[in-house]
Length: 160
Image (cartoon, rainbow, N blue to C red; front, side, top):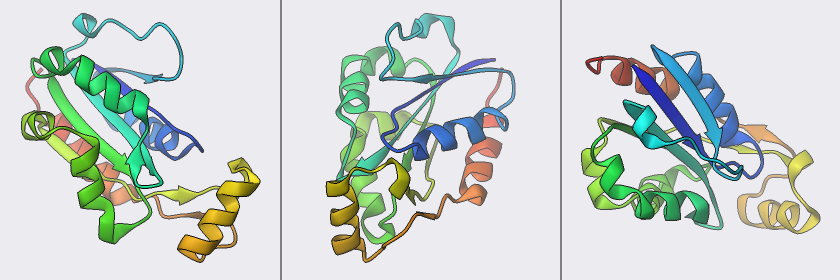
């Protein structure tokens, strides 16, 4: 099975998760940063995994727009959805806001992968907001490897 993992990553957490998934998913897996041009043709893939991260309560607009613009084609693929988010209390609500109900219902597996605050990749304003809102003053990673493993295990059960 050929699988495309499409992600958007501002500070690298979703990219890290996509790479972690790539080594766990069976078959031919290609990952693609949606910010780069020349997205692969969906017709070339049997399955698609889409993920992004939450910033100021919302997923990257490129992911949201891509899902809206390609919802019909995505509804014909084996689909997985993931979200990187540091706020466990709001994560499920943010996931529901990030992906349409139709895509969430169609997805064969979905997951929340935790997240990171990577101060080295943030600008001064972002660091200030994170310090004030989250009470965090240095880089911290809470990527949930077990959630990624469970997602991959379930995704790998798909028929080829």
